[in-house]
Length: 514
Image (tube, rainbow, N blue to C red):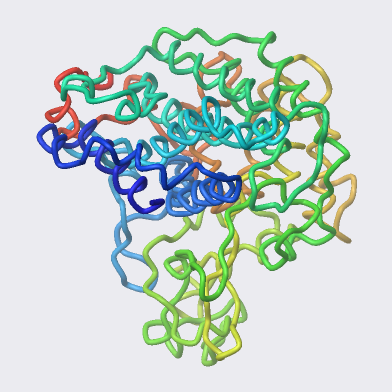
């Protein structure tokens, strides 16, 4: 029955945003068969399935939240492989080349979340009220996450909060849904995250890090209100200090409850650590991620590249056991932005050169390197970190800066771990102007959150002295000789909708500027 529900939800999604002639393919009684929603184990299993669907969509954090941020090399890699997604990474998007299509597929998992909320809110008499709230709290958090991703990507989007097939037979026109305004979309996001927080109540249990929790809800709430405070989208005007105060209140229970790991190197090799607030779980024989696409392939690397000591790299330095084709590579200018004494540089990257003279630079990203399993094979099983304590500290720094309060202490908590024994007053951050602090926080986040889906959203959200996005600021870019986006191309802060999606839903309109 779970498979039937999942298949039907996919069908509804395809009707909504891809096709309009398949409605009669599904029997009217699929949801009335009585074979599901009969006991709490099924509810628990469905919630687990929603987490699994989030894992299916894990690349959204990189593509929507990082790839456009100016840290990615384009064209041909240092290993002479073609690099993927050049239009996204260079912000050369237009109505015919949108980079992603069909809302990045996010309405499929949204349909399942909607179905879960409908059923658990209105049915399931076997649930106690306490348990009912316990299941609805993460569901509303997950729905807020998906819609917040859509909001930051497109602005106003179609708002779907029910599964119409549960409400009886409907016409195809029921599934033609126009884009809501940006203000309406943000209002739903805020409503959902506040419902999630209220449903969790006062308790603050730290559960398994790969399960949505109250802490994850509070982190997302802080992020939502921080964005709302600073970013004007469509008919939504930036809310300013009022929303900054809400974001600060959301983060306060997090501060001091979690900890930074002593060593940055430990982050990706230690699952369920005291720093992680919410992660997406990967494991051998269960699921692997795409970490290999950021690494080297032995056949085009060994005996061909040189290390920083000017010597030929002969052995399988990272023990990749063959490796994968390099499809995503970070820029030399970004790598050079790290101090040599900053331990994050070598924990995140391994640089190399095409010559002993070290003139032609290349780099692989090691955060997704995975592990070697019991059969001596390399597996890419690092968890994807969505929220961790370092993010809370740097968000708090940004909030305090926006409120006109000191923020250097939060930045320096991060730097102390980053520099370790090399930390000294010389590398500590001293308070500056609002604009100085904002840029310093951005640069700290850049170094801290490589491959964690933050950079594009950060540079769009954060502000220069004149109040404009740092996406238009040369000092915020890599290299710092020109801005990521020209001010006259401000429409590029949002993504266009692909032609097929527009064609298949007659109520949709294109993102302004495209």
